[in-house]
Image 1 (tube, rainbow, N blue to C red):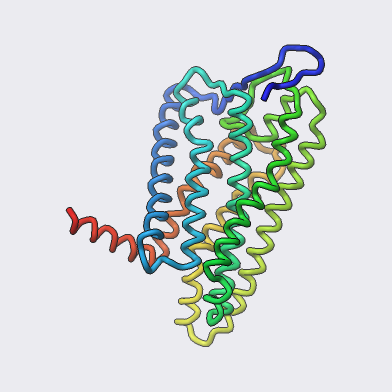
Image 2 (cartoon, rainbow, N blue to C red; image 1 turned 90 degrees about the horizontal axis):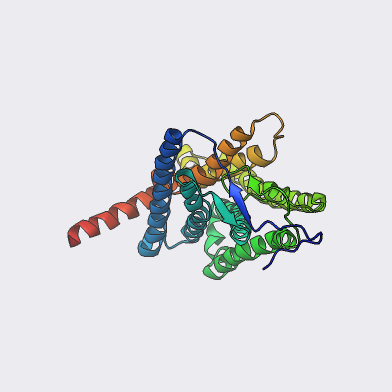
Length: 315
């Protein structure tokens, strides 16, 4: 799609992502660290998906949702990290308008889908602990499929509007984005048009998604904690808590990083500090998901051991 310019001045068709302005030695070190994190993230989440598909004991709703979360994490890091790695070692740090818009859209689309899925997984844990006898009836295969489809559709509907409006803007001034990826706000602030409405819309939609997801998760865990406290034996309380400990850890990381990144005022933080927080959210957080579930979940560890044993026997 061609960019329009109503004033007839020269139109920007590509942008420069300046990322971190650091010495080459530091950039090379960052490249090695981020490449290692990227590969570990892919390997960890692919392992989770493989285990859920192959292990009979993981053929439940909880692990079906976990499999979809791992898929979202893979797509998420593939959206951001490859271009970031190239920019660290390349002198050419440009990205086309279409490439920038695509990266911006998928960053928010996948992130939104993850937040909705986290709240769906909270509901799943609520039913499992508070209504265990009805769990198989309430969270059946049909319901799971529709809940996951709802995550993707809800994410699409809540993020398509700001991107459509992005294509109506003209870019005729600076083309330098002070970030390591095409974040929405830094991008549209380069426009020649008045973007106050678009920024407000993006902020409202982000807040609605975050607060809605956080509310569902918070209410679910309020009921879960109440149910666990009422259990008569310490053994039953420990068993109930262990079934949701991994998800609670992942949810805390997701919401904590999002609230810190988007809700706290940015005036008191340097631009590099904001970019460092963004790197932790966009690159490190996806790495934690598979390791949290494999280290804290006995069923996943057992499935991993079984797969490794079968692989060893075949060799």
